[in-house]
Image 1 (cartoon, rainbow, N blue to C red):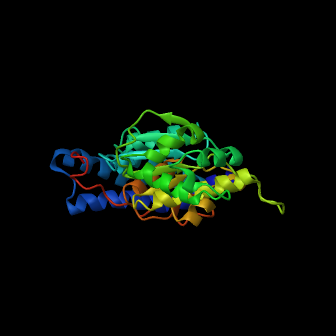
Image 2: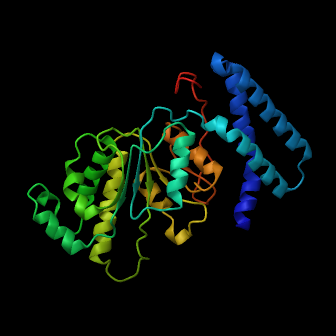
Length: 309
């Protein structure tokens, strides 16, 4: 993790300046509600003093990184509070539940005021192509989706159903074949945003023909992401900063045109996820080479968002 530490060190000062600058800007523009004005002003002043103290004291790059993380830790609650208040966020694991990422996602939603995911589902992948094809052909309402191990159309319609909520006939019909795990929640409530985790990792490509199970699964996954994206609600793919490059899903998210966060195990990543789900600037954020920035350019939470900002 040495490279990550030095990367953090080089970026922390800029990020902290941005974070505290935003808070100061909110105070100056008078957008903080009267009910919390005194406490917010005091908190902002304290963060500003911390930043100035660190600027005068820090010498080495590693110290800058550590100090930056400490200030971000202090700023985190202010940046996240009520950012997603009243929003319904759904979570889909493309594969089994990632027990490392699930707590990070749930904590981010709690920290931003969204509460528990409105629904959470994990897919049973990879597909058994032969069995899946036989299942589709045996169902009158599903037969039109069968054929040639290309299930992109099916995936697209599943993605739309998952994001839009309401009636979900496809998910109901395919539950026995596709759903590995489902958390309690409402399938009818429209999602205001979706978090995606690709926990099934396709085998490395070779010169040989792609096995039918892999081809069928990859087309279904591509279609699912396209369907989520077509709902015009924020869709964000996430992974941790220590995800090996060969297993990283960021190239897939980039290819399908959905935003991504590559460091959800860090506060930077949680801040980025919260802002993206709130409608922040779409893109690819984090600490890896595939990221365009650490976080989006953060926007202040408006006073009427959540009723108590």
